[in-house]
Length: 435
Image 1 (cartoon, rainbow, N blue to C red):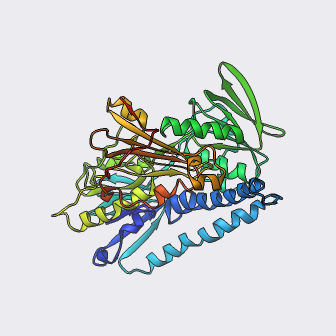
Image 2: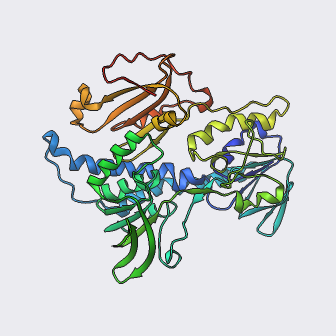
Image 3: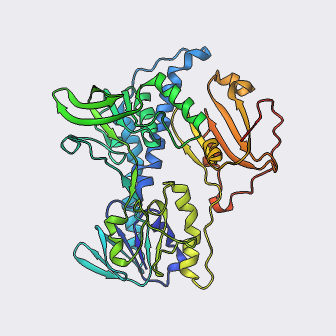
């Protein structure tokens, strides 16, 4: 079996494969995006920013505290001092297993049974594609001539920027804005849409945008016309409602989405099909259109969620080992969260999706300020919102913005074994019927 690469794909291999000959091919560092440049380091930075913001707001609770600043090298080194040794340790552990070969370098398919890796060819009878995705870099004039960052590099800066300019308004842009803004940088965000976090429920997205505009410089309905280097940093020309606004910062983050890595593997040479956005297409058993080639994780879906990739593991492991009795991955409700400030978490449909589908529903909404703990938090902006079928009272969607919202995601189970929606009673006076 050939496993590409050593992120989630590496976790497929357990003692059940001891009688198999296995090759792992990894271009970069073992651990994939989540460990090295995604979920894990970003959440460690987010927690540090949360601490800084707590100190800033302490006065509202009668606590005298003052934030003297953030020691960025110490913050960064605490994170990567723990993370960086893990990849090499994993390589050593895998190389110590007699039935596993580890290959480093970029892999490309030669045909459906053959890979080329740095001039050598590897043949196999079963392949698992798990090469993830990478940051999308839009074609902006001058961008290729300036030192910009993506989510893969921004957390390893040598110093804390005085002014960080972020192109993008999604979850990566929002989380990094919180990290650097919380630690003391001035942050400017440039987003094409009319709100940040456009894929969230409209009411949540609007509240999030409102709160972010109080913390930082947010430009909506805006596009970047060009980027250039100047004596005091980087100049970003922003087209805002027909006029050009110049911004000058000392660091630039491009956070405009992610694209799957299927093209880097040259999957077309193996006959593997992709959709219009380049994602590898699979059936519910995680098999591509080529019988002996499987695929999981970010290169197969637009969710880009590590917990979803993890949830695919037991199914693909079983199906490779027991092709005569395959199981299907049929996700119903996949939770997600944005680790920003405020936090956002959701599962199920948004109100806009229900409207577009022409489906009737009830809305239940409760402000944090209407609860005792909301009083303790001095919170006047957060809320929870549920969308419910008016006839069956089954939950159609749930959306939270505010402190501890991310518990909705972190406490979730496997997507396909998510409990059936429970019957809910919406006797709250804020409930209303929407059509």
